[in-house]
Length: 332
Image 1 (cartoon, rainbow, N blue to C red):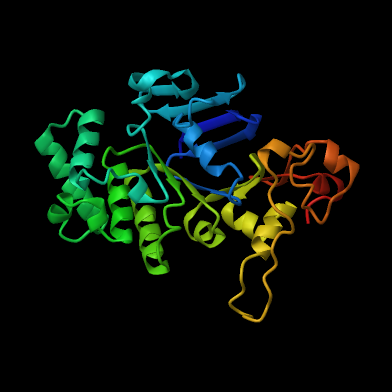
Image 2 (tube, rainbow, N blue to C red):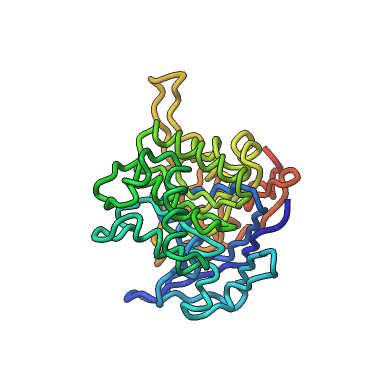
């Protein structure tokens, strides 16, 4: 596979009425073409902010560090995303080389404009197709994602479609420009399990067909196990563990990753009580020093965890963890 995306030292802060807060802290990862990376963690861990940073979609009160580098590798050369400014330059990545699927499509489709009109407008902005060609491409893509009678659905509004159909229509819209990178921000959370399975199968098929890379954001480890090639675990704006999905899920090394897996319900023993991670994720305004997880960690080593930021260590090839416990005792 060929390299598609490099995110290096991504640090992002926001100005608020309470002061400047850190939402993402020194995050680095890479993605290959045709690869699916799962980005997991609790609500408030910085997953969506990280994803939006790749398209520079964060609001005007966002501040990126000077060390932040985001590079998109395209066939005709590299795109240094942090060097892009203004809507004209950003059009290369926003809806062009990169597309994004959001959790709730009703909040993404304009309610007073038909699905088809929005798809056509996007294609006419990002491609050299005329209106007739754009309409045909849109109908074809709606058909490809499994929407019945796509020509009729093309002329309907978002509220006229079921939740599953809206999500499929959003996927069709995101894929119609044939992006190199697809960011899927919890695209199955609002769907019932049968539709979830259909959407996951659809995305797998599209990866094989188009060879695109996907960043799949979710808090559902079951979905990640079925979808992703590798996984990155986030907590309070920091990556704490990365690796091949089966390796990380079978051999979790960070206490937070272990906690997420332990919190999953067991179908083998329905009487087993759930095991939540103790405490709550801190506010970014009260960001803990040292390891950001030490305030909730049952394996806390004391002063070292509360003062020293852990660096990534290799568990096995391709599997890394940022934890002082691992530094001290080795792989579990």
